[in-house]
Length: 435
Image (tube, rainbow, N blue to C red; front, side, top):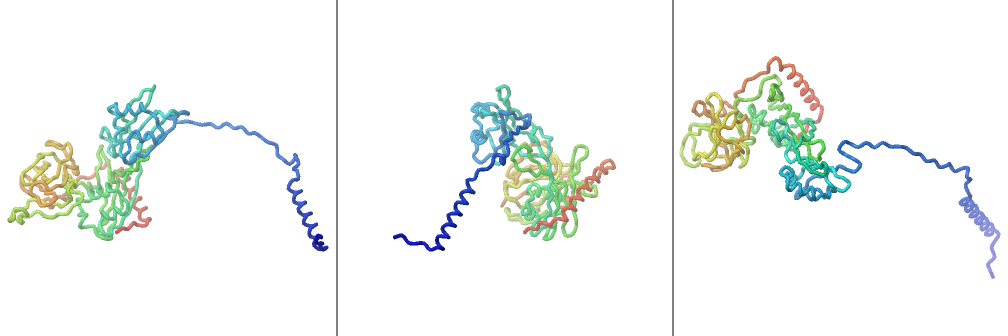
C-alpha cells in the first residue's frame, strides 16, 4: 500500500512542479519578429597599393645565413623552387659569389607564385665608412628579366646612426669598454687617437672616465647587425685631465683635432702596436738574451701575442721588406727629413706591401712574430734620423703641428658645439662602471 503524503509534503511537491513549469515556459517562449533587427549588407572598397618591386604575383623574403648553409638550403628556407637559378649561380662568374655565404649575414629575395627567384640580393663584404674604394659597400644582385637571369654589383642601401657611451674605469680601459658593450673597433680607435699622448696601459687608472660618440652603419633592408665604424668624438679623463678629440673633414680629408682646433696627429705613434707592453727600452748597454754579452739596444721591444697587428708609426714609403739575419722578417719605412723606422721579428707582411708602397700613419704593415733571433713573440722597433739611431720614445709625442684656418673655424665650432651638447647629455645618464 503506497505511503500517504502529509499535507506539508503535498504542498511542497505542487510548488516544485509549478516552478519547473515556469522555467520551461520561460526557456521556450518565442521572440516576436519585430524584436529582431533586419540584416544589412555593407560593401566597401579597399585600395591595395603594391611597391614598384612587388606585384600581386610576387612576395619578398629575407633569411639569416646559418653555419653550414649552402645556397640551395637558403633558397629552400626562402620558399624558392628554382633549379635554373642554382645553375646560373654555379656558372656565372659574378653570380658565383652567392655560393660563398657568410654565417650571420642575410639574403633578401623576391619570389613569384611559382617559387622562381625574381630578385636576389646578398652582401658578402663588411660595411665601411670610407666609400672611396670601388667595391666599398657593394652587394651582389641577381635579377630575372624577360626570363633571363642577370648578375650585377650595386651599392647597398645604407642607414647611418650614432651611439653614445660613457664608461668609468675600474681596472683597465679596455676591460671597461668591453664590459660596457663598446665595440672592439671603437676601443682600438680610442687607443690610436689618444695613444700619442697617453700610455693607455700604464697611465689610465681606476676612476678615469671615457665618453665617446661613434657612428653605426647597417644595410637598411637586411637582418645584418649594425657595424661600428668611425669614432666621431671622444673625451678621456685621466687623473683629472681631459683629453678631447673630434673627427673633422676639410678639403676632402678628415682627421682628429682637439677641441681647441689643433691637430692631434703626431709625428710618430707612441706605440706601433694596438695592445702591448715595453719589455726592453732604448739603451747603450744591455745583456743580450741570446748572445749573453753586453751590447747596445738601439730600439724598443714590445711584447705581444703572435699575430698582433703592427702599424706604421708615421706616413712613409716602404724602403725594404724581407729577411735580415737576426732581425728575421723586417719592414723598413722611409719618412720625411731623412728619417726611417724598422719593424723586426715579424710573422708575416701585410697583403700587397712591397718596396715603393706608400703607407699612412696607422696602416697595418705586418703582424708580430718571433722570426730571426728571438726568445719570444715581440716587435723590435727602431727609429733612425740621418742614419743615426734615436730613442723612438723620445720623439713619438712630437706633434705634427697644424691648426685650422679661418675658413674652417666656423664649421669646426659648430661641430664642437654639437658634441659638447651630447657629452652634457651623457652626464645626466648613470655612468656604466665595470670591473
